[in-house]
Length: 257
Ligand SMILES: [Zn+2]
Picture 1 (tube, rainbow, N blue to C red):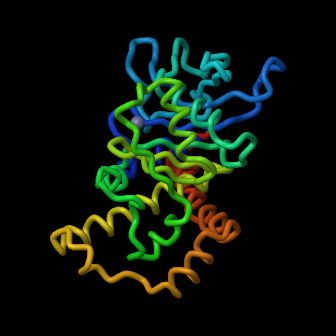
Picture 2: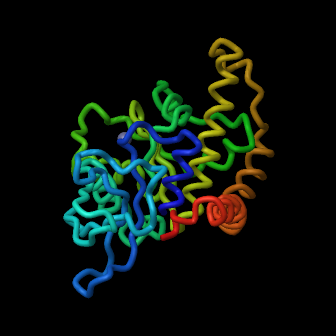
């Protein structure tokens, strides 16, 4: 999880100090079966912990009511309220026990967020192989104007997301859910690439969708089956994430401590 914070920062996929990633993990104490781990939203001087500085031990643990019950290695840290409530609320409203409730990435990455602001549902068009990876796994949430960025927003987001892995939060950003950490990292990366290609193609034809070459139905069916296969996704996500892992093991090993 700590490495994911650093990688999304390095790849320019976070915005300011207001995006967040979380994972449900076993608690250190017997009081809680699990806690929700995330990077501190605030350190003792009121600043956020920069994503490029997140370490495994700096993550803080929250209970199901969003109270910090496990401190990280930096004294005096707090969670950002919206982070805690959006992530916990989303988990509460999604199907109970769904495996991909374990890891949630919420970002405002540039192209996924921009495409999510179009009056378009589904957001993605079948125009690139990366798009086919997500088209059957993505939902859209368009109720931003009634949300208040607290627990209720998380619950509305989770209800819109249902058992999908990806949620385009229109006028806001994206939410990505998975069972492991390597998968949402890889999904975040390739979702952004899919959106980048679509945005660039639309820009090149002045927004005229009829000028964009789409896959035929047979290719869509065949490739979607292949690109959404769980074993396929796991294999390629591991390949991608752990190439970065090995680089950081050599260059910035503090992330693992
Ligand atoms: Zn956000």
